[in-house]
Image (tube, rainbow, N blue to C red; front, side, top):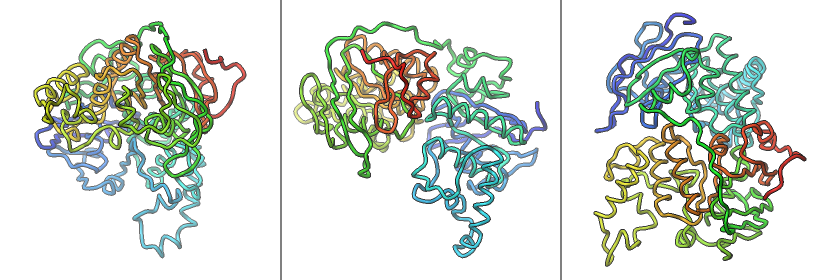
Length: 511
């Protein structure tokens, strides 16, 4: 231990109606440590941390700081007690400057204008102290994802937090940005801060953590020192069974060209150039990965291929047919399955049940309707099979999908699209928010679809995901294809440089 117990969650319970999210969570965090929190989707990690950050209130239980009980009614209360959280989805106003984001709600307009010079000086001093390279006058929406994350971390430090909660902080970072963040975390602890680190990436957890707590079934089931455990043991504690830590490579058997993208150029939803003259092919029986830092055209490429963004130039050819400009419904009728990047906006309807979400765009399918009437028994049976196959919790077709954790929502979307037996599958962020046990299941199912002859385009910011299932990897930066590499972990530094925009002479040509 590195000091007296700084924080204790004592028998925390949290219920949302009939759903039990936390069932007696007890967790001790020592001052000056990096404490990792692991668990399957729906294990209760984010709920517990949102209670600690003042976003949620517990149904029962206590929070103690240095042995003294505290009450948290809001994130502002948490900040006053030295607790701050950097959420997976950043809480920044994009059209304001960094400094303006930091002082929102902190005083009257006249006082804020008067004090702005001092605000800038404090930000610059903290940025220099921790090597964060944050400019107070920068407009947030002009910053990269990695820069925005540093802005969020510095925002918490600006407000004087002693305990910093990081929720999946490396989810959208390049390998170089990830290593920079891990170095920063060690530096913060050396400066007397305490960090709770939520992550699904066991290699990062092992590299940076002092102690690790594992949650399962809404409780903390074990806490161990990182030096005394292994990734395999942690995975077993998380899911209650042995987990394949790395999928065995299986050779692909490429067939005909299913998707041909020729000189594709399009703009983002705001009308700005996003994809520039992109060309590639995806064949039957192969998975083509697309790597890149979020915000470099992958989103717009996916939306254009799905029929959700207009194409300015170029063509999209599916099975020899020009489908440029086809609507999502037309693409679906042609057998295209789509796992979107933003499941809430484009993949599910939150107030609907699991069964209702399974038949989105397929309510007229003969398997699910007859004579204009829904075949509810068939719908329930098909939904139950997806829930069982992908281990979605709860196993209840009538549960409202908005009540599920993000990872369980993702598993349902992936299962629904795979159940269509598609000829072409477009996937953006396959395992986002999914725990390690479910990752194995989901990746195995995607590989089965490939082996059955599906052509799959997999866009991902997770290099480990691409290394596990892709047959070749295309790298995007600034809306362009920078090059292609084989899915070899030994090329990770090279891929990281390409993700940053560097074109390398040694890049392997496309097959």
